[in-house]
Image 1 (cartoon, one colour):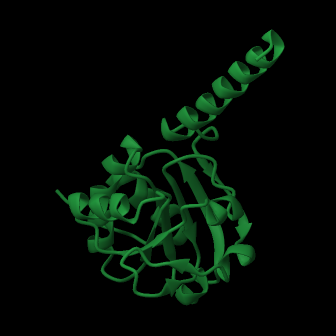
Image 2: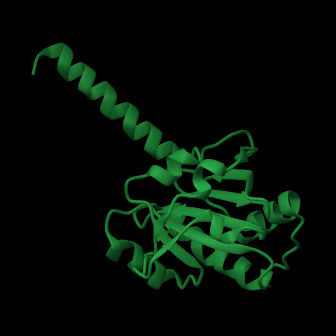
Image 3: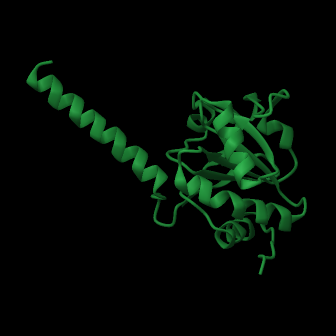
Length: 181
């Protein structure tokens, strides 16, 4: 490889690592929340269920608020926030649906993470990244809040704890969730 080619290759690798690390470290906008508008492009995408039992589409949740969380087993903030999301899901008692989207190539890796963290919501796979690109996700974890009309009302890149997720639900969707003691 010529010297300019090596330099170009090194710059591209460095840029790719910086983008990935920034997303996984919780970087985002000033407060990490963005207003995105409607999710029509993503509503009809059929995603394979992690358990292999068919597919799920965002349109399947029409009429109810929805939390969509993109994760990977190799992303520490993703793993850290999953138990908090489960606590909020349990406390919300059906007021909001949850959908987890594994970005792992391996079904086993996604299932392993689910077993370790004990999450109980619907889970699908997006190993090629088509779905996360459609909703303009820029890193992991990425969390979307969708209103009952299917519009994306908030997006957060970076890990969330139980209080932060509860605050987002209250501020953006008017759903009050009591935090666990």
